[in-house]
Length: 215
Image (cartoon, rainbow, N blue to C red; front, side, top):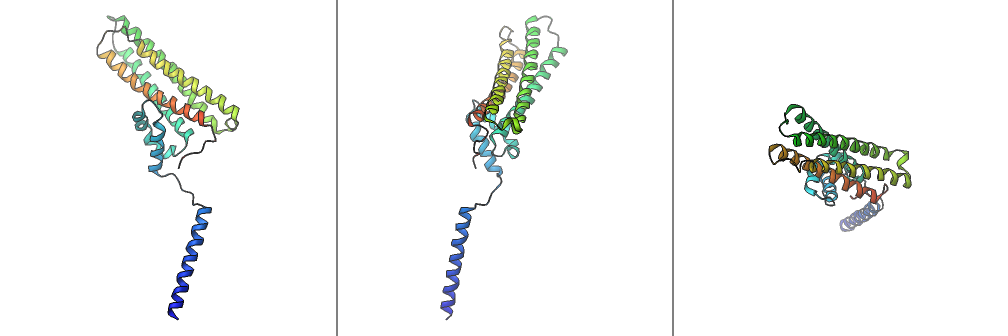
């Protein structure tokens, strides 16, 4: 008798387990992106850029905000690029005001042009970020509208990168020294971040607003 009861309980348990697994398969429990998954998404996405390690290092701290969202990833990347461009513009402006380059007019001219380049780059990156923030609104819901908006972002980010490159080009005729080394190194770091942001923007534009996010 006890053997029959034990067998019955075992069969009921097995049946309950089968029903639970069947229900779980049809209705998986939704999960929020874990920090590990969010970081993996950023690392994988950064693999499409020219400077993947710089990309991951600059964006991984925002993993909880980005999660697995390609649009949010591009938006944050643009925001990071904007912050670095602003700091570079301020740095060049400070050097131009504080230092005396009267003995080397080429350095003074290169600094002035570099500041102008970064001033324009800041405006273009800011416009790109503004446009990305509008993608979540009604204007971003239509396919044609999305393509138009993303085309604007791609154009502005590309122009910003060109402006940053023009800054370093202006120092080609400047004599080698601490000033040239410092400016070109700093600008190179900013260019890498902007280049990565543009690559992530291009990737998102190709996938479209309805692209599935990896889990």
